[in-house]
Length: 358
Image (cartoon, rainbow, N blue to C red):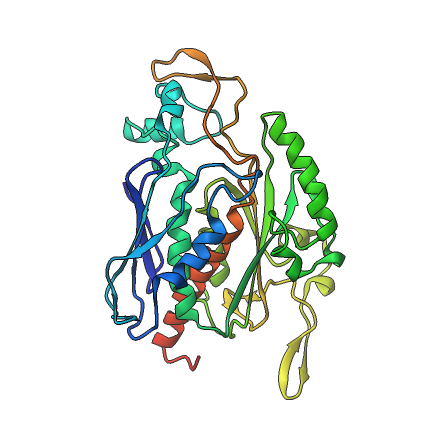
């Protein structure tokens, strides 16, 4: 299987399956002498961990990370860093009834057509469980970026219910189970998702990731554009079906003068009067906040009878059991933050490689 690695100078490879003994990641390209310990990574894994509210899967995984290589006496050595996360709460028997049937909206059918076999236990390699490895890699990437670059994520829409941006408060994100920056909407989402969950259905979501303190000059101007790599990174997250940078799709409705981010000088430095570009022009960071949004489809695995086919080509019905998120987008917030971190770390190292001053 190809396509398990991401990045150029900062590069990581994830491995493992949802119901295997463990999952993990190998991170390469990390400079030496960067302080790194397991708690630096564990903090971010705890934010993604399942079972923390009734709105996420009740699979109980501690997601305790172990550093197996690449760190000596509390510092990186410049060699590959291998991270291990054991699986401890698998219930493979929940999936036996779908061993030869393909769940609609899932990767079951495409995996089977491509490889002629598939791990039906929780989706195997296609499971959202794989994203824990990305979050671990993101924890390492944040150490490379340092404390001057801040990456924060928030849920801005669940189903048809979007936040009121005038009520945006970053402090609110840590106060509710939805990563919602709008306290009033968080209450509405709770009521909405309770209904979705009781109905045995699921809902989609939109997540926004914002990076502050990013210097101007990161990104390459043609095929390795910073926004192109960010879009690619977010699209690799399970269930993501759309990505936009800055104003994104809404830019199509703006006039040229509305969309252009005009520039003035303040205290001898350039200041942008707006940020429709999302902090990136010509594939290169401007020094403004980098703003990325991505849409996550409703969870495909739901306990309702649905029409499908089996591996013999028969038309059948399927009902998925097991523990699933009524809105998988909730736990995608830390994953989006991690993917932002790994892309920025990669481009920061590239910038330094050509003599960039940052």
